[in-house]
Amino acid sequence: MHVGRRAMVDRMVFSSEREFRLDREQHFTAVRQAVEQCDVFVFTLGLTEAWVNREDGAVYPLCPGTAAGTFDPARHRFVNFRMTQVLGDMREALDFIRDRNPRVRFILTVSPVALVATAEDRHVLVSTTYSKSVLRTVCGELDAQYEDVAYFPSYEIISGSFSRGAYYAPDSREVTEAGVQHVMRLFMKHYTEVAEAEPAAIAPDPPRTAAEVARGIDEVVKVICDEEALDR
Picture (cartoon, helix red, strand yellow):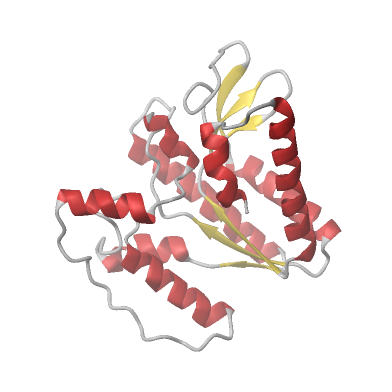
C-alpha cells in the first residue's frame, strides 16, 4: 500500500496542492483500513538514525535536502535513537493498533541489509552493528513481554555466519533472490498453513556480468530503502 505509492511521492508528480492532499487522504484511508481489518501485522525494523524537526518534533527517515526539501541546521537535527527510545515508540505503536483492532497479532523482523551511510563520526560498519543490535534487542523485549507479538529471525537467517555470506550479493549488502526465497519458505512453513516447498540449498547465485547484475537490480528492486536516497 505505502510501497505502491512511493514512486509518485519520490518524483513529487503532483499538479497542485489539492491533488497532493487528495492523494494523501487516499493513502491514509488505505492505511486506516489495513490497521482496522488485518489479522496479522508484520513490521520490519531497519534503522535507528533519523532527523528531527526542532520546531514540531516531526521525524524524517531521510536527511532533508537529500531526496527532497532543503536542509536547515536551525530546523533539523540528527538523532540516533537509543534502545529505550525505540522500545517506547514501538510499545506506543502496538498499543495504538491494538486499540483499533483488538484481535490483531504482530510479527516483528529486523532487516539484514546494512546501512549504506551513517551520520555518526565513525565507520558505517560500526553504525550498522549498533543499529541492528538496538533493533534486535527491542524485538526480543517485545516478544518476551507480549503474547500477541512474535519475532521471526530473518536477520539471523541471512546474516548468520553459518551461511558464509551466500545470501548476500557481491556488494555484501543487498540480499540475493536465493536468500529472499529461503526466508520466505521458512516464514510460510512456520507461520502459515501453506504446504512446505522443497528446501532451498544454501548456495551463491551463479556468476553474472556487471551488465546482468545492473539489469537485475533495475528489474527486481522496485522499492528501495529510504536511506539509499542518501547516495543522491
